[in-house]
Amino acid sequence: MGKAISLLRPPQPPREGEREKAMELWKRPRQARLDPDFVSSPPPLLLRQRVRKQARAKRPREAAEGANQQRPPKRARCAQLGVGSPVAMLRPVSYFTLVWSLPPPKPTHVSRPRHPFNWYEPDMWTEIAKHLCGYDLVCLSLTCHWFHRLLADDSIWRHAFIRDLSLPATYVPPPRPLHRTWLRLYAAAFGKHQSALRNGSHSYCYHQRHKHIEGSRMGGFLVDTPYLLLAGKLPLPRCVPEEVQLSIEIMGAGVLRNARPGIWIADRHLLQCPRCNIHICSGVVQVLDVRHSDLFLEDEYWDGTWEYEDLGEHFMDEEAAIACCAVFNHTSLSLSYAEVVRHTKYWIRRRSDWRPKGCLTLYAAAINTNLHGNAGLLSKFQAMRDMTGDGRIVSIRITQQLF
Amino acid sequence: MAAPESGDGNNGAARMVTLISSDNTRFEVEAAAASLSQTLQLTILDGGGGGGDGIPLPNVDSATLSKVLEYCIKHAPAAANGGAPNATAVDRAELERFDNEFVNIDQSVLYSLIMAAHNLEIEGLQSLVAKKVADMIKGKSPMEIRRTLGFPDPTPEEQAEMNAHMLEYGWAYE
Image 1 (cartoon, rainbow over the protein chains, first blue to last red):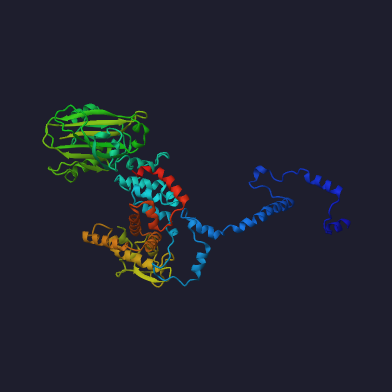
Image 2: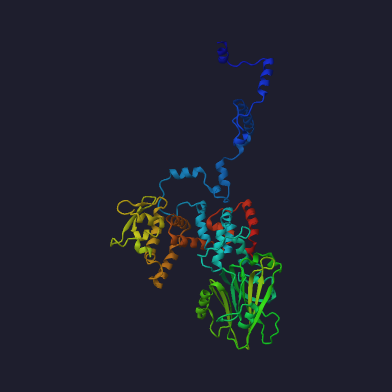
């Protein structure tokens, strides 16, 4: 009975001796209720600890209340934020309440307020980006943070790369390693290094720069197996010897068996004739320059470790009407050769037209220039191989004299 | 190939469907025209939209919907032919001229249109409007693009961030 009364009584301030005892009792270590390794959140505080914590948290808030009053309300802060992120551009709540109280909108577009936020729609912009070239994509991505994030998506750059190399949009290339993104590949293939404006002449900005006259990008073609057929004249011979140098010297064509598969880029150039000892040379050569699209990402190419090696020369010992050379994907030869030859009348210029002209199919690249009277045609075949790696061929040049 | 199977030729006269915009305006169009939209095509194939009950389109208002339908009606015959085979050069030139005029509109309308095309999954219209927006951007500097899209001028922090990004893209400039 006495105990029950003491429970009902309000707590009395303890006397001196008792308080000491009580403190001792509180300090006695208690066993943890749960194994801390098995709980993600800390165990619930005891009521006593909770009360103390709340009291502690309350004090600094009271102190900071004065400063808090000077801080602008959240709505005003939101309005100050720029266009940097879509969330920042959300209108404050009052915007919506205002619209709510207006009469229903009239069916006319001009008077309706449109906020830039409405334009943030990733799917829509991905679609729009498919119509933009690399330079425009860069400008767009420098517009604001949101676009920069969106255009960092590599699929946009892959699409641009394939489109700008005139490869079919349906072609799905194998995935690329992370450190060699499509963006880097695009930059390497279409970047405006030096004063070379997208015409591929920057392949000469390092090697033989002073000899370059003009050049143009033909596009990309696919090499899906290591077999490449090089030809210094068309039509092709029926068969060629196994040995490359012999084959080139006798037949003017040869099959390489260790090309690196992938997307290859073809460029056409006109050069000052490099030092040659044939007296009929008047000084200009045409070059069909094909290379693996990754070549410009290789340091060894830029520091000159990899160099062009001669594969062989072919001299046609009679008057040539045209200077024509081509590179074929040997596996798809029947397909691409038929295409190149069938379209001859479309891509080879008329007899009196001396300008060079290129032809590109999905699996082949060819160039042609009509020639003045001459005493023969010299074709030179060169290849660059990955000498520090697997030794595969990464670039080929076929050089022919023009008179 | 797929067009004759869609079954709208069975009824003799072209089958009509009713579309209801977000502001409750009703539009009656041929099923063939509405079928340009992938979303509507499914509903129509299931037999929806005929008779009194229309297909409600809560995301599209009447002004945009009328514009979208203008496009669909114009392009429906060409789509029914499967595009190229029967189309003469004159027809194609006519369609091209129509397309050019069609997208020559105010920016806000363009926005509603691209969103509607996106919601209704009308492929041709989507790429047409996307191309138009791309043309608005082409050849412009970042600041000009901002103005075109109606963004406010960048804050100093934003400007600093963009200048930092510009270094990454050095390859695109001279």
